[in-house]
View 1 (cartoon, rainbow, N blue to C red):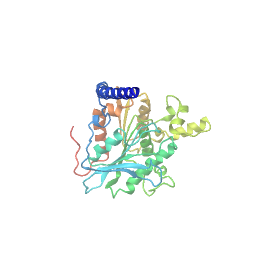
View 2 (cartoon, rainbow, N blue to C red):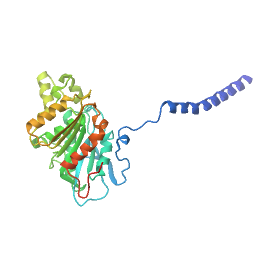
View 3 (cartoon, rainbow, N blue to C red):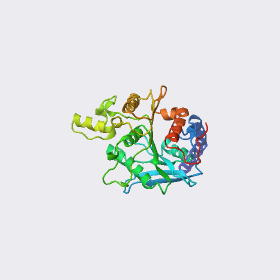
View 4 (tube, rainbow, N blue to C red):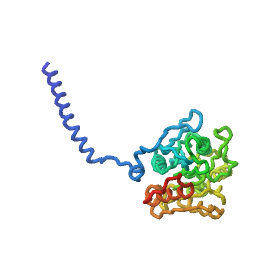
Length: 327
């Protein structure tokens, strides 16, 4: 009996010591690990409390069971007497990752909707589950959905622009530069409407997979190309390279890239801009940052944010009664 009592007493003492030490350990941990700061949305001066906006999350743009066929729709709460310009934001993620809640694809729609735009943040299928072509088809389908529902959401179908970062930029370039005969896919919805884009802004985007620094043999895994021989691989890589679709009547284009980008070499944008101008494209703006890498859009936000804002204001226009914010 004394042994049992002694053991119980020892357990009680040990518990008391642990309870005494835990708060002190937590305080020490707080000192060692300061509170995390949100870097993409809150440090970029983007609107965080959209009290004057209507937000519809996880909205389907395509019938079916695939959970990636969704978009977040953000628009001004107050109705307008005139149709509004619209923007679609396509996330980065190397084709196999990312979603519409990350970085500027979540914050950007809040900012632009407060200026009068109707904004869509897109989810699309990923290359781990499907082909590169299917990713493009999702974007096209979403743009057609916007035109099909233009009256309901007060969208001007002649004023739809897009922003894409990294692989998202590749997607919007391909869709924006493809001819109208390539804009409709059999079996997809809203085929009475175009997936044309009227203005495009891209950042750190691959635009010429044929000139990939590591060689095209490293691309199939990233963009899920299926090929049997070198000639077939070259043909497919050429087909998914935006540089091969440049044309004189290309939509207005704003291109941003950092010289120090370790993921997508700056030569991709250099050659793309040169090709656009050589083809006769009339409206091409290039921001080439000497001090930035892959995150050029956020790192140089004091320049890139107002540049993008002014670009869309000029090419798509603000709704009646909305003025460009003074900076």
